[in-house]
Length: 263
Image (cartoon, rainbow, N blue to C red):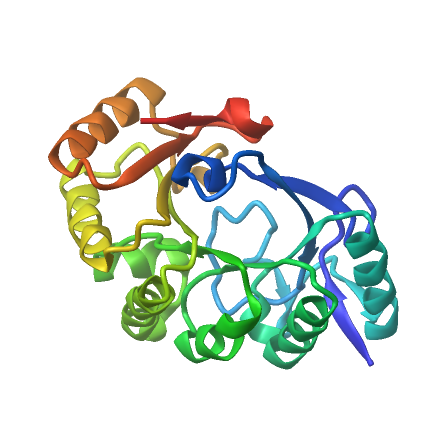
């Protein structure tokens, strides 16, 4: 059986990132290295996607590489031997729920750690995987229906997906599982909307929740513009003062920990 996988610099399942947010919550004292398996399908069509998730051929993201699941299994074993967390990402892993669950169950059986990056659209997927995961990243791209529809490209499914996202974050939080909630920030992002999100995240009452404001970097055919760091920092600081229980950071670039500014 083959599945589509997004390559990183020409390689499959070899990208390394570090879960810096875990240190910020006090869950770990050092960043955990993750090997990223990026599935080549997504149920969103975000026009700014850095993985080109809006460019599809049928149901799959263009330029995906079709890989035998047996080859993926061998890479999982190799990465576990070297102490990596296995991060299932995308695209979105909910598009291959059975494969994702099989990988997660195997990793846990071998004593490894599993992380999942999910757009939040499928709380049933979250429920099925929650017993086999150590920490999550869930996108909350917007909390306002019209804006959510615009930036996810999900059309008439957008209201359902937004409600599902709130449910997914709540579900993970019920278990106090560490989760990084990620919100994309554009130049027209309003502070009032961020306050709405802050109220929701506070209500989740998860001590291991970290909210990352991810600065948009790119052009996206002129539809979206990058925000000013100083403006976003000022907004984040005011929200932090109003909701001191929340742990908030700004992802200003992808240069490891130096790219994550904690408020």
